[in-house]
Image (cartoon, rainbow, N blue to C red; front, top):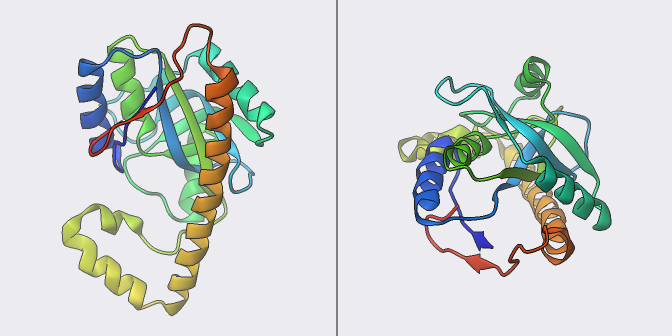
Length: 219
């Protein structure tokens, strides 16, 4: 197994995944990390995709299906690891959606259980090369929860001064950022627990479970 970091957002996911699949032949491509829940859930719950809906990028396929055998195996591993799990469509968006109102709008439009920014591009690249695809994410923020600031500002270096000013102008925002960090740590622990169980017992027979980590731009 090769762990690869794409970076945040669809552009990085597209560039890194296409380059990676050109150079490597793998049994399955797994889009993993954090996601926003679009259903009633708790921080750290696992979100397993049956398919990915391109919610805002017309250039992507409308839907990318996830491999059912891989999805079923991931679900069994989540249950074995005693991690609460939700299974359904994942909405892939082009920007961070931070307000509870906008989250509910996406939930109503797509019927998805979660949203992220990378799975659509990774799934489209995997489909292009005939590689089975799986999405397993952990809940880092909730449906009815507003994020403490517009994190899209941090995706553009030229907007960082504006983002830092917005943070400094709201003293309470610092406490909210600390809370969000705690939520992400809890989500990370749950995702790690699932991954250990999946690698030990959930992979199909004949799949190699050794882990390699690629530094720098990785998928």
